[in-house]
Length: 405
Image 1 (cartoon, helix red, strand yellow):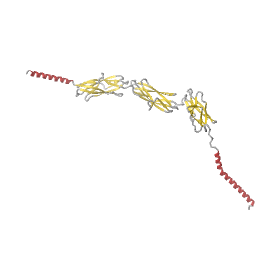
Image 2 (cartoon, rainbow, N blue to C red):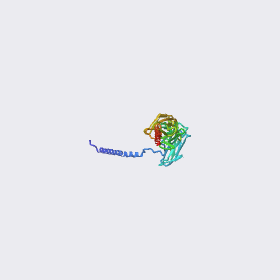
Image 3 (cartoon, helix red, strand yellow):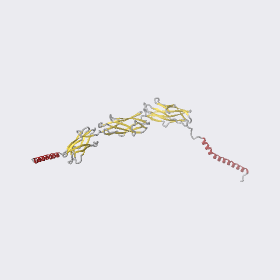
Image 4 (spheres, rainbow, N blue to C red):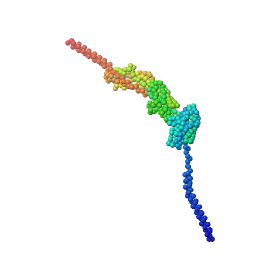
């Protein structure tokens, strides 16, 4: 059925209204992101920082009785302002103070670019052996006030310990010769310590203690947690008897003393002398016969000598034998050895050198040279006498025969 003019106008009006509504919705959707972004910009993303702050990297520490602990403090402020400092909860018999610039302080200036060196130092009495002690540091300035909780735990084992340990607690050496101990000095405490070394040995012994690689060092600085090697050199006197002897090393630092004991086993000294009964180093021999020559071996050490072997280097063609060629000599004793010397049949009158030696695993004796004089054989004396007698007899016969004429 055909529409009337009134119906057509009504349809046209509704269409226009729908178009306006659609345009409004589209505009709203287009403007929504911008409005949302503006709202986000106006809303802060973080909370404003506190105007005044105080902090320490280690708010809770453990110490041993009698130790001092130092809390490094950082005080910051948005503008330069004086900050008053106070502490609550510190025990009455403890020593507690704020320190900065080498002084005890009550306040500090904080602000941009300022980083004052500030510590809170606490000294624990030696009478306190165990316990937890909380305290509170308060910083006030610029109309603001902040608190920093800290705590000190007192324990006998908290601060670590210092140890003195020899690598080998016992060494063996002959009398008169040095023995060297290597001793580890470990500083297990949280503080650097400077130690004074005091070595002790029996009377008459030489002993030194010094840092490895640093001769003549009177003291030893050991950093916290570090270990240093101490060389302890001890020399028993030559006359020391064979036995075990204790030596000690004491290391002393402020508030700390450690000690260790070591053992030196002296095996006794080894020394041997070779001589003659009258101290003369000459002898006489005769061609065609043997002669005895006595040697005296003396053990001048403090330890027994076993298996001392006597040797000889004679001139060519000579023979030298011994009544005994291997002997044992107790400490301080002497043993005689007889050498039988037989010169060569071709030896002519004159002086010859015979070299005697004595050897042992523990000691070598310098060679002893004996100047030996060779006398002609006695038979040549008889021959000479016979020649002289014959000569005289011949002369007598000549005189009798021709003297009558």
